[in-house]
Image (cartoon, rainbow, N blue to C red; front, side):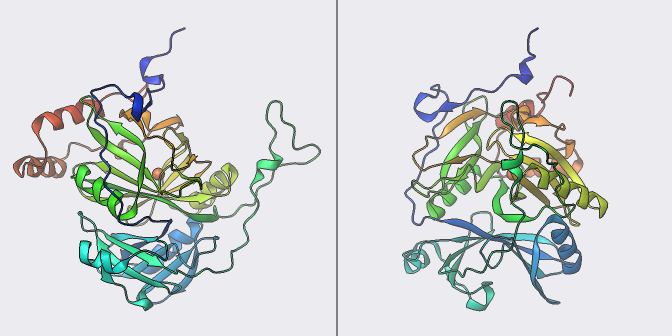
Length: 379
Ligand SMILES: [Fe+2]
């Protein structure tokens, strides 16, 4: 029996072997190399509701006042999420750790970085604030504090039975019914109307390396998964993702949990507490991680994940054609909300991009036809 074309694995070309029509992503010199994604910053109109969602999602509160909320994961850093009280909920930006040797004075001259108030950095340390081309804040932190790790149940991997691998005899699997405890913040994804400018800026200011570049039929990049340059130390397949779209916005962030059972049992807890499930459980193609997506009270997406790919800095970038079906290997079908709907608001946004010459009609047509490609034979 033949396999329908939409179920075939997409080609993945190493940069040195890519077909000639695929544009090579140009990489500027890095002014600085981030070593970790430290925390995300939000403004929230209701901090108590935000704290409830994030606690059920598996984060732990550190401080919670009328004006601010700091949450942490089990890992050794003082925070992984900072929220400030505001009239309107919005994503503010992200903080990254950088080496002690990072020249903040040069970043101030080159990029208009401004000193951060020490009191604004949870756990202390020193830092500067940059603004990316889309207006998101990017904090760079030196000498950030470490705190004792919180106990996490060990991953069940040593107890798993698989064909040909017997690890569990005369014992059972009973993962605790508890939120999917977050070990650490994994990645943040941003949608932008100016992919080239944003990608260039993040590579320049954080030293990010492209791991997988997804391109349109004309060979132009649409979306890139970037990892940290940690040299020989393995880095997550992606820590920052930049995707072209019809608006500049936070797309989602992802948070690592112990294993598949934490993902699944955490889903039960979130469902029981009335939160909005978005998508999962499934396995992504690029990054390979097992995922489960949730929406907070303001509609921001948060992903639980486990079992993602890791690469060292010498791994060559790969190029993969973008199709809706290439987003996930298996699992529930991606919800319709993942893709732009032809509403009056959306059409107005597109029209503005065309009028401002930030998008061409031919690119819009190409994007539309790619997005209309069925992801699966049954969709
Ligand atoms: Fe993700």
